[in-house]
Length: 282
Figure 1: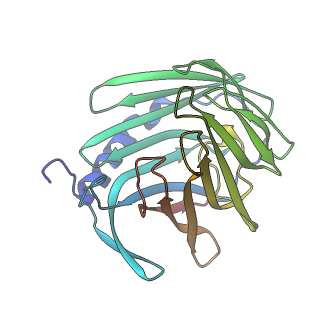
Figure 2 (figure 1 turned 180 degrees about the horizontal axis):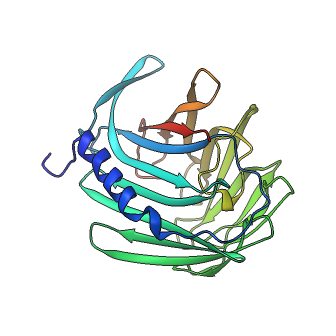
């Protein structure tokens, strides 16, 4: 496909963008929250090739159980951090020759997030209030209609959260275990998201430390179920997570498999998303 970048061009574009913009972000505020020992340096996302995702970039065959699925790269992201583990820059390249960059500027009690669409030269800005730990408490200014509101324990794990859409999330031991999305009108209703975790495995290190360390553990599954008065039974959507670890126990690959029994999200039954991580260990 003519619009798709080659893998080397994708990496080169990210490198040029990083070198050209990394000096634009300033850091002023002290934070007491201890960062993870290792930070995520890059994240590469691949999706199954289908009528929904026809990219042929960096094509790979992934085996899940007894089935083989072809996946190709749809996004590659590169991150930089300060010495306190706070994100400074984020550069994203997408299939279809689309790019954006995100710059994070920390001042006393706040972080300003500026997202620049490098493809059409548009941008948006939001500002979050930070607590004494350097963690986001409230949305001060941004494109969203409702306020983000969060609280944390002394270790930086979420204890309560109302998200950008004004929806409260149920949190247990630093893990979000339930989120309910509601659609109003005939034929709609509540869509409860129920999350499960492997309590023996620590979660991935946070890319944006100011949002806290949640989840505490590795997610293994989530389900979305809707029961509507016009339907004969429940409609269920499930995402199952499996992981590949490196020699020292870090997640190097996350595999998500979707099952949509009732077309809640357009009938993406069998869709696979693979996410690869590399790490920076200061």
